[in-house]
Length: 220
Image (cartoon, rainbow, N blue to C red; front, side, top):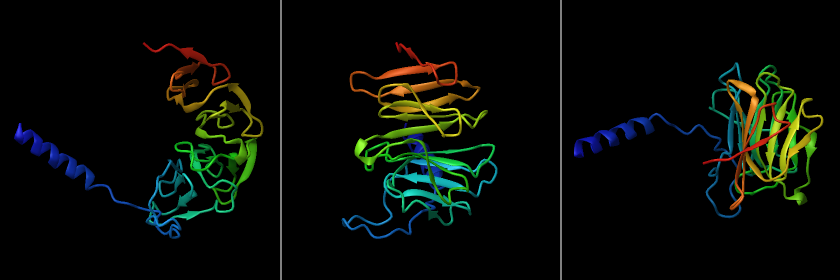
């Protein structure tokens, strides 16, 4: 038993030694006395053909981009109305087109101003048809893009599931409720799964038509 424990510890040590922090760490000092550069990262996304290009979203520090495999980072969202980014969706056919779900979807550090879109690799951002005000207290937790038809995106929000079929120009609320997760079936993106939040009202849904119609699944 002791030998198994030692082997397990050695394995854990070996695995952890392969991980190194790559930033971003060069951030302003925290005015609240907290250590600078310490905080959550909500999401990570990658350029589909250039592994040196990485994107991350943070709860209240915005969208960050690295073009050298994580050696250095820069942000392009300091002037946005909401500095939180809860998810990132990159167009697989045109990686210069990037969508971000604004706000902090995890802990509500910052509320959302909607889904924003960049057409120049994240250098600048424009509003899409899914926009909210900070005073609306909306949270967007998940944003996914159809890998076979990138004009289709689906967002899981505290006000329901929203879907666009025209690259974000307009969005339709296809299901009400507080949703926290979404995922396309990797073998068939016409199948979408969604998880609804609720202390006594959690539900799991499935769509077989790409998102317009969701069927509640009974979990046993």
